[in-house]
Length: 236
Image 1: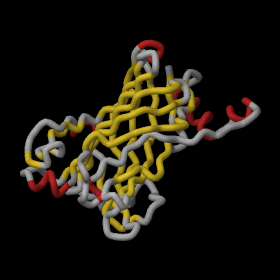
Image 2: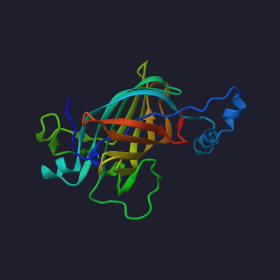
Image 3: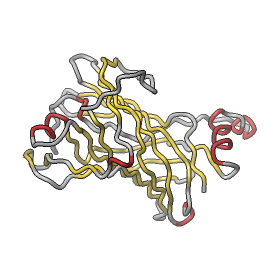
Image 4: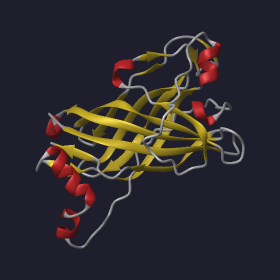
């Protein structure tokens, strides 16, 4: 397993985890902000999307310094995979691939308010028109080399094989300083549901994935907080 010793600002922190608001009365749930937003944004077939549990791991991650050292631009990113339990999908496999541009930091007000100890730089998550991004660094062999690509795609596969597919359309990545400079990263990734297969054919919707990754004593990073922001929807 590759150990990522560089600053957390170059670490892929996208993870899919959301809490559920439970109620013993369906009428209460129907009046929740999430349910109202779902109906207004998609119609009666829109459902509030939540996720209860996850077991996700970083397949690979590339930092800004690694990419620049191999002749690339100031882009960082990576690929996340694993499993999760979503409302309306149940147990599902998860694939997320994204990158963000540290060379063109956001200079105005950030759209999202970080929960962690943010220290300043806010990088935009690449929009769909910027993908695929072909990295110049090979984290598997710890040297320069092609082969790792950020696709900007999100794929959720239910236990029966039915899929929900989405595109990462933007967002923000905030650098965090818990103990030392850059030992954490907080990401808000906006996702638009584009299609699906099986019972999710023609699926629509959108959600924002909010997560925090923090450097551990093992000098690897772990996701310490994650949620799906209120207003997430899935129509099918």
